[in-house]
Length: 211
Ligand code: C2R
Image (cartoon, rainbow, N blue to C red):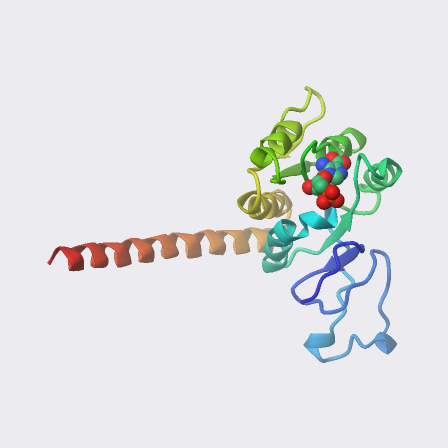
């Protein structure tokens, strides 16, 4: 699935055609029977923003995870520093547009998640990203050290954080979505099985080498 992170887009695993929120697909647009050309007209419920397209390789882990759980999202590039008006417009209308959770990924002096949170009462999850200097500690501190009153749920630096941001968003959405809750439980069961299998393989390897 090709992605252009500089553009706004809405996707789900069932989607191969990106459309803007609010757009409607008629039969003439090719939404017919072929699942590969199905157009997803669901309202994006997670808004994912990143400070730069250079963040995309890590943010991709977040988007893939949302797709894994069949959660429609909208992904954009915007910056509290470079495009403050755009951030203001996006955040202040995000609840009206039907978003339930916002995710913001940024590196360096990462103010994006905090500024979003200051402009909406939707839950905001911040992903601190590693840049060339300081190993991501700068972004971690900038994202996590919010003043009382303006919360940002901060996940860990980098790819693990990107995946966990999507999982945390899924858990929030699952409070009002039993099917999503079931998918999360199945995911946890698969994870438990995978760890058991790894343990078994390790024990076989260790006992094999001791013989
Ligand atoms: P460039 O690669 O575009 O120079 O960006 C981005 O998230 C990126 O990690 C370098 C880094 O700057 C970050 N950035 C922020 C914000 N805007 C961009 N931290 C912000 O508004 O917080």
